[in-house]
Length: 274
Image 1: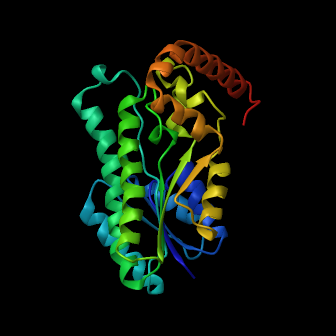
Image 2: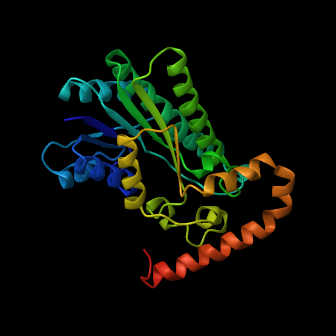
Image 3: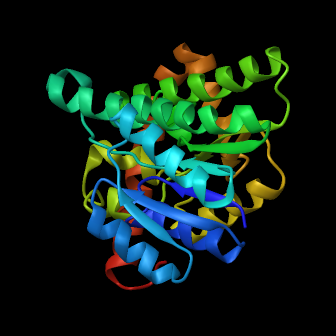
């Protein structure tokens, strides 16, 4: 059976991905900075699942976990970098510690997990790293700028590393970036009334299970970039490509995003969504 590691698997999207991969026949290592939460996910999966506490900011811990996972089936087949944190607000109002946390978890954590997995995959000539980025990785998201900056770094590292694998003649190891729209998880549950988080509600709010199914499909047919929903990528990318136009449109766009955020708030509080 193939072996998969999922970071941030204690809740939300990470938990949903772990369950989906187990359904697809993977032996799952559920990891989380909260070891008890990771253990609950593994218990929910049942036989064959393992759990561990993992702070993705710790490179040595990531490498050790990759080595442990590889011993189960002789190789490490899949590593999903899902762990992430979000703090909203203007960049100049956030302190250095807040910015550093997002950069270290979202960007450096993705790098640590990717390199740890590649250490095990490159010698065997096969494997797949899936990095959960966010649409914030392809657009400078107002109100979530530092978060977006960390996700831009993760995106560049993901695609650039894939390019370098191919330059080195390594064709059997895949790396994918997954960029979903806003996902209704604990990351957004406390931000329904936060105007700075309106961008996360501006499109089509997804459930963790919807995204997890697409991640599962990606394990069967790898691709460098998966945007969910697909149409959102080109639309948002235009904001970075044409910043002067984006500045003129920004008030209208953010008013509409705030309207959608309030609508989701009413639906969720009324039990009408998801």
